Image: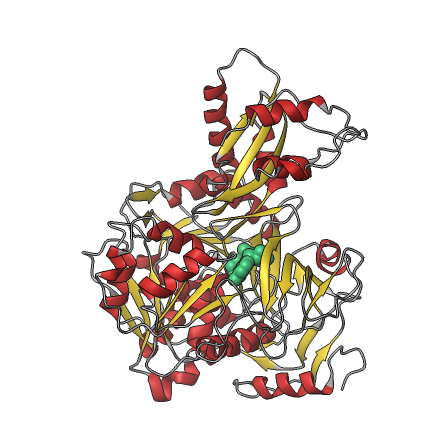
Length: 621
Ligand code: WT7
């Protein structure tokens, strides 16, 4: 074993056993090297492979005619589209040849800003086929956010749709790309997949239609052999400070844990139909809509629409239509459907369902019970899977049908994963029943390796808070069974509808409004979204009507970040509570919005204690 490895013999043996179930061009020289302290963890060094050979080619002999992908369009009257493994392989090869014809090479970054259609999945696999690095930007982000991610990743090529469907809305994606890349000279190519036939402008020599070019592409593209630690993708996510971080996942480690965790957690059988409702713009859509199912030769369902369009029965109809066996969705979707009443799911038998999954945010007990009773008809286990963009794959979760069910608990770590709870000082809580900050003690293969272009920030964010540990940013409790219950973020990140939003980012966006002097953003308990966004602002102009200002602030945030980050509540205040050194006391604001006035604590040492009373009086429910 390599000297710098942090792994015990047991963990070493476990992970090499799992890795041996995949297909390698050449196996590794060392299983794991590096450690958290030096922030240099690597896995499978010396190995060579191509992940698409594992997702596609490997299955062709046995599963060429098996459905790989079922595409369910936004509009239920439009026909579903099916791809067998043979067809998906062919489509990926052709798309890869198209990318090559546009000069994309191994190591280049390719950006996707698209709606949820098969071309998005095919496109990212095409990148992996030729060793290019995909970076998917969720289509709900604004042009300005897209621009920031392009500037950070230096993607020379963008793939988009003319427009994207989501419920009754059409998002003009191509025009948004035009806006995002104005005067960005490094962007050489924009490929447009037609979907909504929205009117668009095409810039000669830069913009091309996918359907025209793909016709010229050959049907086979050899898989490019890459090193284990070559990057597979960059995915941006919000942190507690600064701009979004481009987390980099590398090929072999990501493949090994994502492929294996999918099989284990969901207990997938050969003829199962797996539906993950996440957008590919998020890590869940990468790991458990795309790579996890395909690595296992499973059938994956991709849905273009939203839960309540055209009616709140849409999910249940899709389940019956495609005989879905596994539904993997977010608590926010469950709560939003719960609102329409249990008689809707009750009128569907959904007898194909075997396992239900939850992801993205803590699931409250009520939503868990509703999901279990009305969707799972009390026969389907719920797997409440805890993980993060950084962890690549599921870390803490029940094993379907094996682990005892306990509502609202992510329960136990997967084999190979060693979580610990630490107190403020980083001391490990050794007692079984404990609470604290959730850390991971040993490396696992699908840990992100760095923040693109900023390794120092990576080290600082995850490995500097507690020596020798990976810090998740979450708090958790452990009960007498050793079951974990995730209680939520302990940093300045809020979780809105399962989407992670940095409060600092929202504040920066708000501050772009000319009349705003200062702002402070905190999360508050929200019935449907889990957490909502509450913004306190001070304004340097008395002449504007509060309701006009509030509308403008919301529009500013939408423009800078996107609709998902629009504050739910905006309160205009005279001043924000500050320490004598001028630091905004967000803790006090958090207590106020949580209605936890008893725990505000001592405010007498503030620079401006009188403002607290004012803020409480003006609070919006
Ligand atoms: C944060 C990660 C995991 C993919 C989707 C979100 C929260 C995630 C759970 C869960 C309680 C959860 C955590 C985590 N979270 N799953 N089952 N129970 N909280 O990925 O955007 O990287 O967000 O989501 O707070 O840190 P992400």
